[in-house]
Image (tube, rainbow over all chains, first blue to last red; front, top):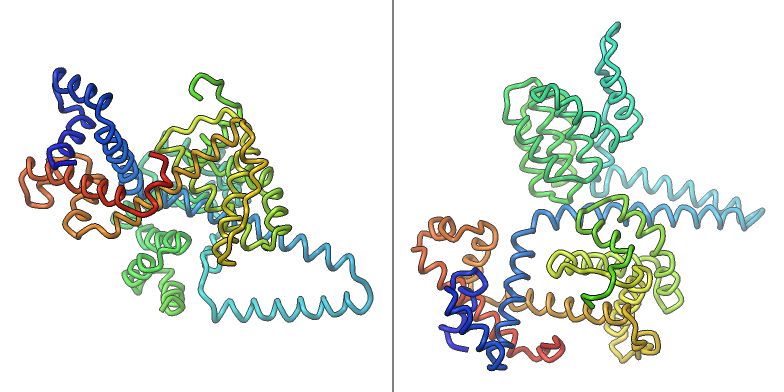
Length: 249
Length: 193
């Protein structure tokens, strides 16, 4: 194909041809096989790039979510199999397996301090308390319970309801961002946390720390490190941040 | 296949497109055990099965978004055949020898076989397009990255400090160059154009 043909492909795909030119183009597609073939390839590549580049962030979210579901599924499967094996064997073997489990456990505990840090090592969210004594807001109570029992999907819905009435409530926004990290909705979580950390509320340092945890969970270690380096010394999580930073280096 | 009725299992495809955790979990609970068994019975282990499943799901996701995949067959058959194919191809690479894919299941003239065929072609295209994009010169790469990220050609032109007309022309020529590279590649005839 000539340069002119590729320019024509692009004009046709973006709807920049007038009626006559469009008709001429379509007639040529029907009659000129080589032209048609090149056009199909051009169109497919265009759609491919539009998805690969245009949806990059969305796809990354999807991959991270898939990764965590897959990881959970297969580690549960392994745990179940080990249980079956232990039940099947008796006497000495039981003892031997128990001993090796202890060894393995020791290995994992040891690994916690030496191996790559993972999100779950650091994501220890404190119990939250949204209701003051005598305060009877059922919605707040419900959200608090859902969050504290790690029912994050439910908690997110409830936080959204609260924010509908009280959109500027930074504390709720912060807790909502945790539910988003927990349910792997990273782009939304990161956006929210970034906004809080750039604001002037007392939650700005916390938000920065959670943003780092979100990047850690996404395996984006470079971004995680950059955020950790910017957590100020007077932040409550400064020590934890330094600890994580050391492990990442 | 457009005149056929969309299968109720389309919900799995839609769930993937929407990154719906419940649906993804359901795919693992319902359809993955069969794949694990198959891989284990054919010289593999759970770790291999995990990769095969994950790669297959990502391919389906990509195809569903780009090509608006509409399933007219059960997800079970489609997914299992895809995983099976992928595992046999992986085995071929590991052992560096021919493995005959049991065509008896694949050549049955049913919808599932047809969908599996289309998805395999789609995957081959993706791989080749990515490979060729990597070989493209830096100027074209930058321009295409900007074009498909920003979408508005006026902004792209401004961000690259070139004129609007030049940016538009350059975009078609860069994709044109890719088109040519793809056509000249030795694996082009596997793409079914």
